[in-house]
Image 1 (tube, helix red, strand yellow):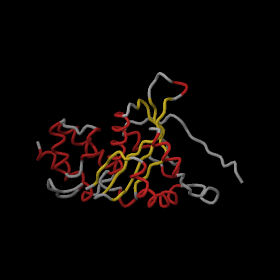
Image 2 (spheres, one colour; image 1 turned 180 degrees about the vertical axis):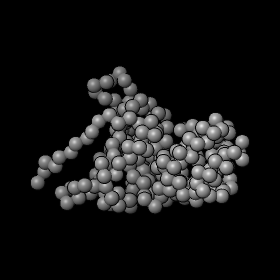
Image 3 (tube, chains in turn green, brown; image 1 turned 120 degrees about the vertical axis):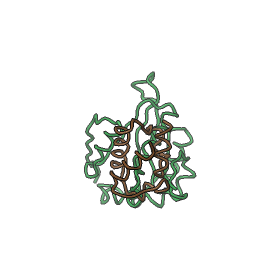
Image 4 (tube, helix red, strand yellow; image 1 turned 90 degrees about the vertical axis):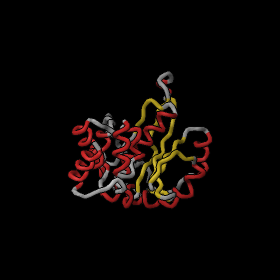
Length: 152
Length: 69
């Protein structure tokens, strides 16, 4: 059975590290310039500060997907309430049947609301466009994100 | 009403199912699951709240949650 739950970094990370390389190879666009190097102490620190929010999908206990967000009061809108910005999200390709993606997103929204989040932001890759799914789930496309590599 | 939901699911997925049939066995992806739930809502007036989507594992769950919603 697939379950969805909020987890802390310490319990998520050992399993997450098994999937991160696959996630990176599947989605990263600058692999030749920027290598995968997860800053474990930084994530732990963010979790300790209550900034990190992790929702996982597990099948019979085995990690098959995750959605990590950063929670913050936006300095421009200090009275508006908590906002969430997606860090990373991924679902193993072999685990995508049965509507698992929709359920993961539903659990993310539910758990963010429970933490007092009033607005959430996420993006998706142009080459793996999820606009239709996100729109159907009630998300609104509001920005186009541009990136430019400035390093060597 | 559960028979009506069964018939909608079988029609939309082109598969025979029981209450024990899992959504993975139905082979629906995320968009297809949303289509299925929308068809159920349009034809029966019963809906699954977004907050309970993660609880859907089987056809029986769809019927039970829709009926209780």
